[in-house]
Length: 467
Image (tube, rainbow, N blue to C red; front, side, top):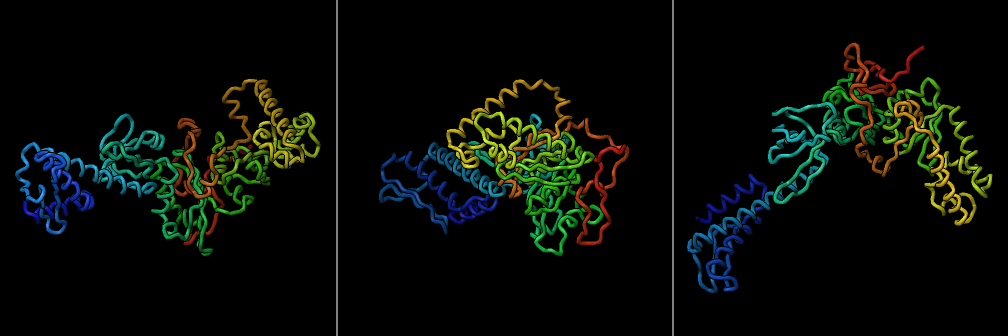
């Protein structure tokens, strides 16, 4: 083969396979080196090089030049296998590097087949997998259907690259918003946090860099035109767009919309917020099976408990009675517990002895004794608690808190998918008629959009029944 032909073939391979020229040249050199050593033996001074510009092959055995065509059939076959292996490894690395850099990005592909509930999606250069657990509940995909998803994971498996897609990850909603809303793509509006239970409901916290641009109105669009495209892609999933605020006293009521909040008490030591509402707003603030307060907790990164004023007073009295039973505890420490948001023995078990000693002005040994007593009392109360039917327990659950492993992740707008606790599909309310497109928009308070809009009526799925 002429050197110019070899260079042309390598250039085509580089363009098609996205493999660096040097890797291809090195692979061919290694293959020819192996072929020469099989003929003349290893350690006999065999050397093979290829000119990168002309493609000319220079093979020597000591000081004598070798014609590569004289290597023999077996040696040539071995060289071919080595060359194919090298190129496959280089191709695998190129695909891995390309898609690893795209992790979290939105991709389009066509479904080629199904394997055990998972969809195999052709991305053009390679295939990827959309596992059943990463598909939105209730949706089905058929062959040749084009779908959107985000790249969740990229890893090597031997000489192959496994690319895992997701349609349930919060980043999927983030990318859809970036595609549909130019202000987000241009960074005029920023998505601060996302909380999502795929297939049921999501909450998006947004803020505007330009004070002249209304972040909520821009995301909704004229008569809900922008948000409608996103809701359609998500199969009708409800989306609440709320205004971000650095102050939790403002942000928590925003996150709990459409419920009206009376007062918010923050307890930084516990990472807990107690929210007071009126009786007629209680079920709306909690949401069906706690979904509204659970998503709000994930959005702000704090545990949120919904109470009425009477329930809070009862909790404080009950906690004072419990803490007063702890041996050798002072009245000041009981008051400090209540002030810092400790409402049960279990809360006491989470504090470190050194922190408790500092808070109560006691020794570390005394603090350890208090924590030990709280652990025993919490276990005793739990064992004495009568078994409650699951349905009644869910109905009676007036405080729903979602514990996050790393609240700082939420602050960056990237949260992990919560376990599926939303209501099953069959328990969704049956609509007597299809709601207009604009009702699928936000539950936030009406705001002025960046362009003339008509008011978007709030969803009424969780409005309390009127007497």
